[in-house]
Length: 349
Image (cartoon, rainbow, N blue to C red; front, side, top):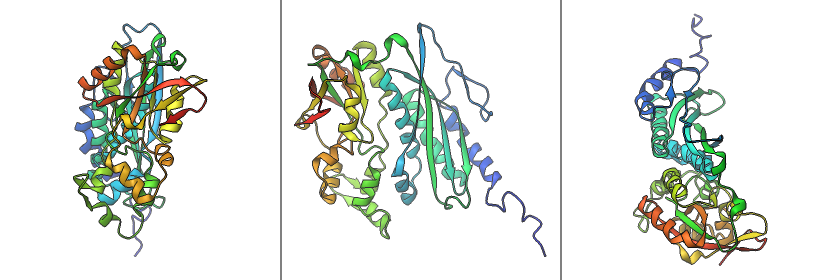
């Protein structure tokens, strides 16, 4: 007898009922991110946001989009999905604050092989937490089920955010001068870059994935998997506070490409960064990766954040005050170098 439902959407692998349930489960988490700028109801076709532009003479909107790379593989292997959303938010908001913009709202996109409502809700709970940490409203998103394109237990997440800054207050690297001080803001760990190398070093992608990730590392005080899944630091609030009281002249988010690619992006031509690696602590996880993978030091600094998730350039006379302010805001920080003349980009000593 022919199955009368063989032509249904569910038979094709898309379960709309599961999608409805995931929306129901995530609703409360999403609403916790709402602020007075949010318009419309939860579940609309488009997210609406009305920013408060009082005090801003020439508003400039700054947008950014990103994903979390192959770090997501670890979340799937460990069946832990409540922090990867924080990473998705961090990767976007940490970029747009480099222009001096304050994040306003965020949207997420999740693609999966099969909608498991509890898993989707856990992912979105992380997104909501990241939005709360960054002061962003989660005003929309999409969960797309892709049977036949992705395996049932696979998913990926990307995000998009928009912020605003007064044109006169855009952080302009052309104001950076020789003798300015480079301040490093501590990272929470590997963050969300370099995981293709991490997985290669530890053989993640082979048969004993879970055994490797569940190994307790005494120096870390936790398992390797727990350390690697530590969510990316969100620097919005401390950076916004610092920039409001001590003018930031240049800022760089230390993401893919590490020190050598990112720090030069906040410096004008003809100037370089002289970084003293003895001025900050390199967390054990990076030394562990380097040892296990037999990776040259330059490659480590060209791939990972090495314990510094963001750098801010300020005038030398304000450097100590800037560090003190960041520390009071709950972000470990220290002076890690100076701006000098040169075309080397970054000089590591």
